[in-house]
Amino acid sequence: MAYNILVVDDSDTMRAVIAKTIGLAGIALGTLFQAVNGAEGIEVLKREWVDLVLADINMPVLNGVGMVAQMKADPALGDIPVIIVSTEGSVTRLQGLKDQGVKGFLRKPFTPEELKKAVETVLGAHHE
Amino acid sequence: MNHTVGIAEMKISAEPGDILATYALGSCVGVSLYDPIGHVGGLIHCMLPLSRIDPAKAERNPLMYVDTGMTLLMQALFDHGAERKNLVAKVAGASRIMDAGGVFNIGERNYTVVRKVLWKNEILIAGEDVGGSAPRTMYLHVDTGRTVLKMGGEEKEI
Image 1 (cartoon, rainbow over the protein chains, first blue to last red):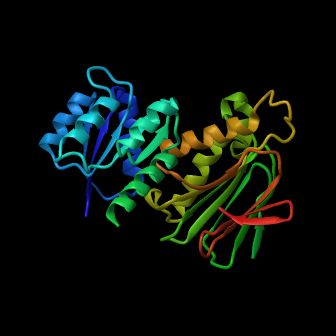
Image 2 (cartoon, rainbow over the protein chains, first blue to last red):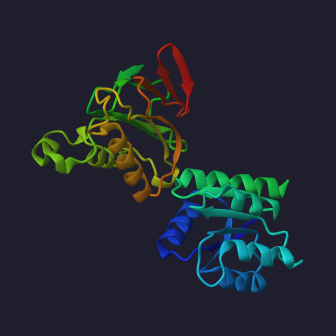
């Protein structure tokens, strides 16, 4: 089966890098959706079938933390696995996200191989 | 048969019995590219990151530099029937040897350019062992694409 993935990041460059890496990673990709902030991300999630979310934390309008909180509060979206891709280093903030069920963290700057591994780990675990 | 890849050299092979080897990778970087479908592979041993440092020298020996060398390695593999989308890349070396103070960061810069060239060519690194201060010897087994490193007395596959 092919996975639909949503990338939420306010940087065009970052979304392009993530999109290219996912393309190269050999992951069975259905549709790659993109959103520039958490609010747009939630819109996409309500409209489309998404299997995995890759989200930044620091974004305008609605940040990654707020987006995860909204997802968890919505029974239809709460089970979609999320990987946080961010420069965030605050242990408290990361622990808070972990407590909310975030499946993975990737610290920027990352190598494409690290991103590939994070996605494979989460999709593999999700599929078992 | 074993083929030695010297400094600023590369070798390509599609002979299943061949092993390509390059010795004493210090701040130099060794890159193996292998097409597991076409069973063809190549190994290069580059010294310096960018050919624009010395264009005249780069013209005489483009394999000395990572940017021009990698391009030629890929081209040679394509000429032997390899396909870009199949290529498995492994990287070794790029240590701080001969540059203990880290003044020039040659190893690190070599590695950065390898990454850039591969990214541009849409190839992810499947295995690597870089940095540190130990010299490495790198072997590419042409039958399987297995890439093995020897460091000190230890041997490991990347």
